[in-house]
Each structure stands twice: as C-alpha cells, then as structure tokens.
Amino acid sequence: MGFVKALLLGLSTLSAAWTQDPLVPTIDIVSELMELKAAVAQLKEEVKVLQEGQPKVAFTATLEVPGRRGHIGPHSKDITLVFKHVKTNIGEGFNSTTGVFTAPVRGVYFFAFNCFAGASKPMSSALFKNNVNVVSIWDQPSSGDSEDNGFNAATLLLDPGDRVYIKLWKNTQIALTDGYSTFSGFLLYPLK
Ligand SMILES: *[C@@H]1O[C@H](CO)[C@@H](O)[C@H](O)[C@H]1NC(C)=O
Image (cartoon, rainbow, N blue to C red; front, top):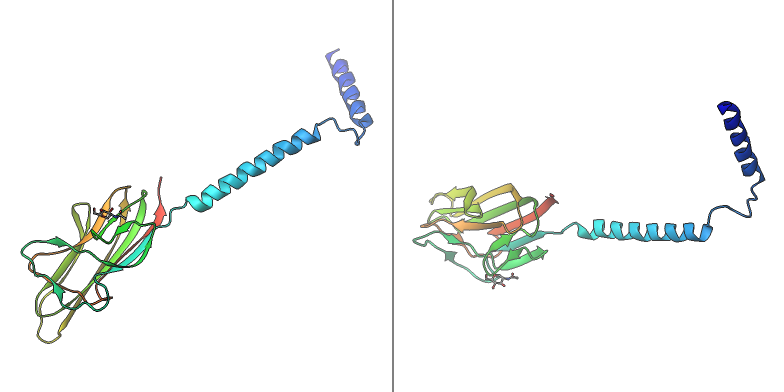
C-alpha cells in the first residue's frame, strides 16, 4: 500500500510541475532579486575590506639631510641612531624623531641597514628588536682603505608595538654623509 501511495503522490507532483505556467512562476522573483542584490552588496563590501585591509608598511631613511658632513661618535655609550632623512614612510611606522620603527600589525617584516664611515676609527652598529640585539656589523680602522661600509639584514616576526632600531656601539663612529648610511624595512606579510 505504501508503495501505491508514494506512486500516486509522485504522479500528482509531476502533473503539478507539468501544468505550471512558466509565466506565473511559483517563486517571488522580486524578493529573490532583492536577496541577490543584498548578497552582491555584501560581497562587494568584503572584497573592499580584503583589498584595503591589507596593511601597507614600508620605509627607507638615511642618517642625514643633504649637505651634512662629519661623523656621529665616538661616544662613551651606545646610542640609538636617528635616521632623519625619510625617503619613504608608507604607513608611518618609522619615526624620524626617535629613529625607531614600531610595528603597526602582527606580521613578518624585513629590515636592512648599511653603515658608512671614514676608516680612521672603528664603526660598529646593530639592529635591535625591542631590547634584543638581532644582527650587527663591525669594521676596524684601516690605513689601506679610507672608507668603511657594513651591511646587515634580518627577517623578523613582529607583534603590534614591537620596536626595531639601529644602535651605534660606544667608541665607534658613523658618517653623516647623506645616502650612505641607511635603514629600511617593510612588511612582507601580515599574520593573524
Ligand atoms: C615620534 O616620536 C616622538 C617622540 O617620542 C613623538 O613625540 C612623536 O609624536 C612621534 N611621531 C609620530 C608620527 O608618531
């Protein structure tokens, strides 16, 4: 009996479908359209957040403004180098008053620095994350070559508020000559 009932039910559903007039649809087209429009608007909003929400962070600064000569140091204690001449500062993470880059978001960042000096005295500096020395450079005075250069770089995982900066070690010097001593960094990709 159950089978016959099911068969009858199936047949009546089929005949209902066959007799349905396509010009008189059983769905409410207007409300379906409204729902679709709302869904598209929501998607557009999400795409915008995806595009704009990706933080953009990149900077390059050199130690001095054009025209300055001479050296910073040697000092009797370590100092934070203030790279004053900002070339790029997308996202305003780098502060040219303090020389400190502060991470705006959690993510993987890349930093590089080059230090230049006359070779009459030692030149040594280091990149710090918060209060920790990450990578360093060192160049001894020399008589055969009157210029010193030292370069280093680091890829770091930073949390918002983490600080990255360059320190000049005590008893060493760095040249002010514009464009030779530089500090750069950028956000490689953000992390949750
Ligand atoms: C840079 O640091 C100085 C000293 O802490 C502060 O007064 C200034 O507001 C900072 N600048 C920016 C753009 O955050």
